[in-house]
Image (tube, rainbow, N blue to C red; front, side):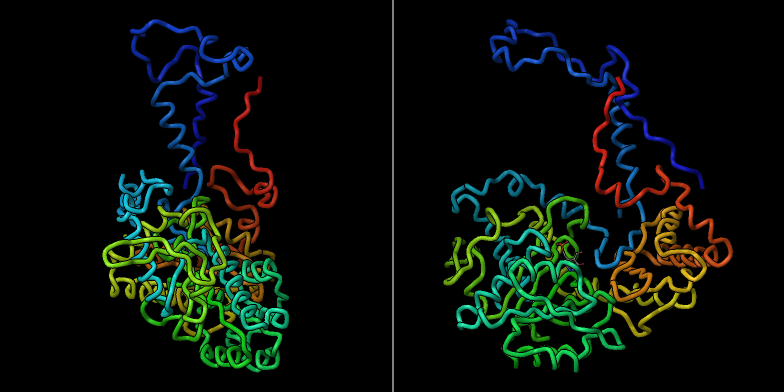
Length: 488
Ligand SMILES: Cc1ncc(COP(=O)(O)O)c(C=O)c1O
């Protein structure tokens, strides 16, 4: 393996008078700049722009695009993030002029096609959730959580119970956004322990619920990648106590068409369209976290929602709507991709996605179970969690192994999450990878486990082949250097 060559930066390649583009000769009278722009706004000296040829610009940006690992470059088994390959045809659909060039202030009659797409997407998501109504407004999973909990409060308020129902129950395996969202709507968070099989400890839950319970937030499969076998019992306990169930649908890639959150007893579901339905996750771009709800919550949904009247689509606010949670109608481009993804797969295709995602995860888990600790040895869903406890005893941290994987051209699994597993490595292969890629990952992980046992210092210094070596991750995230600054 050879280290990546440094990227040619156009700023350093600059040479006076070199040009990538020349303007045609001026064929109109020249107007002095001072006549166009007030003098006080004119620059006093020319900007220090690089003077480069077109090919140097192309190489600069192509080089930059290769500095980061991305799913278009290599395997990306980042647990809980569903970093699957997103078909490019869905990007093309989102860019069709009829979708990309419309404006949210346009009159309804001129955007009937876009409204039809949203209407149908609302219905598809409602059906996948097994519930009765959907809003497309929230802009992310966490935003969906916040919106869902606002609906819960509106529901309890209407029943005169908001003052009394102040507690939100959240399992210790939950994603950090769950307690954060609950705190944002002023709920007191109570942590529900997991049982030995990784599910909700039902007996502990029974003791925790009461007239103070507003609800529970769960993801199923949970962040250990395990399906909670007692989910119906959990739903009954919470409902009997007068609480509601919130389903964090970030792990939706595992269950599509096989089980519906509504049938498990959930009242509110958020979808991460930017995981399950064809928008890249974690790219810093827009996301979308629509929520579907059961009948008793639909009148509180944020508006506007697309409704249909004979052949006409129109905007509607539910009777007791909590109001808007976002400007306009959500991140429309993400909605188009999701619609295209659902339509191109069809119902059977979505089931195949989940089946393959689960198969891939189980394949990897069984191939790696002898090389790492497996805290929950049972069939997993679309992801599974290993522990680097054994390697830690030899001075190798999970972070070291994660960095080493980059030398194999692969992104690391999620590390140190969920918090209840020591030295956690959370692997989510997704359905879009080939058997050859899965086997290459197995080989790399086995080699890393061998290195951890025989030459720990190799791992402690990794990576070796990336454009930059090991960074202080915290500092790098807090002190981003996004601009090139000339030295003189
Ligand atoms: C289990 C789980 N819940 C919620 C979220 C929050 O979603 P978002 O990042 O879209 O806010 C994530 C994000 O990765 C997640 O993995």
